[in-house]
Image (cartoon, rainbow, N blue to C red; front, side, top):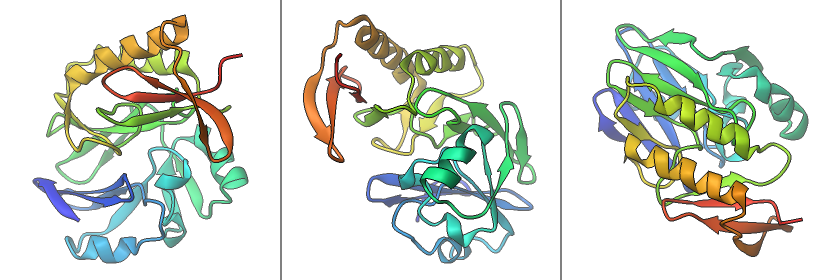
Length: 228
């Protein structure tokens, strides 16, 4: 793990980030990657505080080492997919939009951003005015919007709602660029709207044996279902 700012670290596991945030009394791991990494070892290399796990969502590249935890925070909209499709272990401790996890002098607010998945969330680090973790906001990245879990209209609504907030300046996404400005949000909304309107048709491709289309909107690429 490398330090990205005070009491905050990130590790990259084949393109997806694992975050560690420390407060005065406890620490929080955000996501566990996809390759069964030794998360306790990674944490104790940087802090001796007690720690908990939060998952931004239940896609397989974010839950790879969840079995190392008996329980973890997750939006309950992800629970069925996690347990039934991903065969995930452990107990879900539900978190909802507006909930606050206080690490001791470091309040972290849960922001629900449905669209990429029904229960996608990001974490607002109020003290440092930044969002940490999650897939919906990326720059020069690839945002998965194909399959039954995804909904572009919900995605647009989530980003519009997020843009109305004035309590964060930067985002540390789970993929692609490590740190991006909130100014990336309007072009993501615009690109998603153009895809919905048919102005961006995309190019046919294949992912995990399934037909998709790749819609490049400049700021990032959206992976979408084929045109019907």
